[in-house]
Length: 290
Image (cartoon, rainbow, N blue to C red; front, side):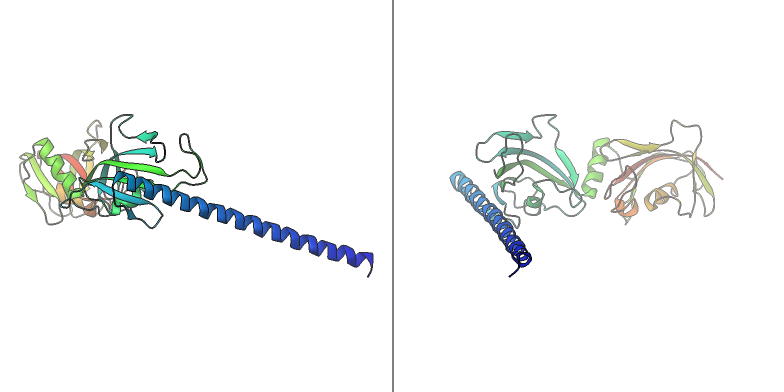
């Protein structure tokens, strides 16, 4: 056999050896991850056992246990507002890593089904008013106070679930408004000052001063500080349905508040600074109809 063939065979053997080493290394890495996962599971189960809690397993390897139950509380539905106080800690040492109470004492508020915080999966299983503890397996990534492959402890300290209807009713109660009319699609019409004459007929142009708010009171739009008026054509489709329905009820000089859910607003997707599934409040003043 020639030296050329020896060199060829040597190259093949080298390649096979390298491939074997790569496969072996990958197998070792996979095995190590599996070992770490089993260790994490044992650590989490031991934590719950010591706390006297019978935990429920989740599909991602996490476990949770309800520490304060509320069987009459509602479960979250897509688009509901989740208002939660939580604490994140090293499950093994108890060191607190983050908490809604440590900084501003303000809760985390998010739309269910649109934001998925690290403890998001537990929200499918716990009810409003309940408290819970969750153990989440660690990862290869380390964080300050949480070394790699160290399980995370999540404590849900308080949980409120608010549908759009809840948010609308709470806003009305907070403002002390008396609802003049509630439409089948959920729009609330609140007349503050009576107008004169008739409401606009199809094709007439209505001139308005308006202010748009979220139910937390934050202003997102308006023309009150401007000299011009906002124009809406009766029977038209240039604005969202809820706004259109509200202004078409008004007479000249009338002041009113209309509040409506996202089904007749900006829907699931939202628009610009308006998130999906957001009820809206409009303070309206009808200045002219032509």
